Length: 115
Figure 1 (cartoon, rainbow, N blue to C red):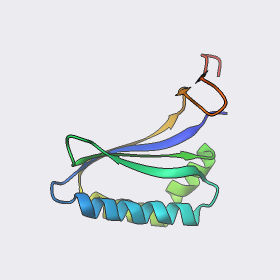
Figure 2: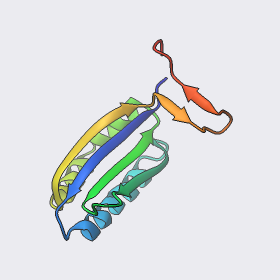
Figure 3: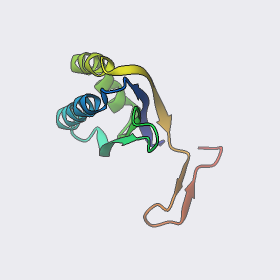
Figure 4: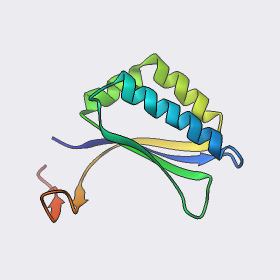
């Protein structure tokens, strides 16, 4: 079974970085509270070191079904709209893990072409 991740690249309007972070934090807290067990580990938001208006968020989901239930919830769309008010652009996607280096218990873990 693939490890499933939600990932989004965000370009925030200049001067809106703190508000974006605040809204993202609220969204992530809602997600973790409303969908216990759906997200494995933490929801993460990272900021570009040289361009403070660029962010990437990502989180691992228990399954594609869990991710789809999260996205289908009415609050998801409402919150996405609130976050969008702070953005110039955003690009969301669903990703499957293919290579993991330095994983606990192994030096290298890599998926082959057969699954």
